[in-house]
Image 1 (cartoon, rainbow, N blue to C red):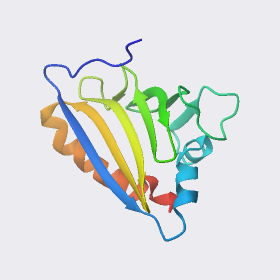
Image 2 (image 1 turned 60 degrees about the vertical axis):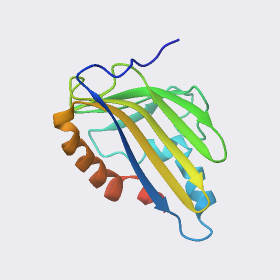
Image 3 (image 1 turned 180 degrees about the vertical axis):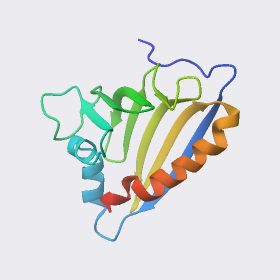
Image 4 (image 1 turned 120 degrees about the vertical axis):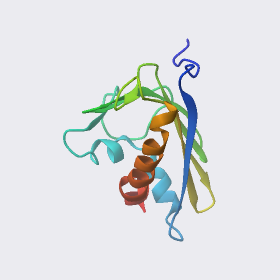
Length: 151
């Protein structure tokens, strides 16, 4: 089943990447927290919310598990992808958007563990004139409010 479109003609694919180095001996805990529902459910500021289509809103993710992150100017829904000891993916569905479906369309969020480092990769389709703003917002969000709280 197809869950995402190809990049639309007036959009460009954008890949935002960031690395986070864990303190010595902390990578196992960080990786475990990054793969648990409650990390994202309990960490949201009103009026934003993360929900999972699971019996419990806590515990480890399951491959294929549906989820949504929503709030004003945000509707990002998808399914947890492949999960290994070194990688976790989240595939966003067609119709997901940030600000507007006409501007920014998230495609995929990936986390990769490499030694004591967690690498984040966010792939989106974005209108070219919005790209500088989008990249700036990502730099701020992931720098201050992203997964750094796990460390």
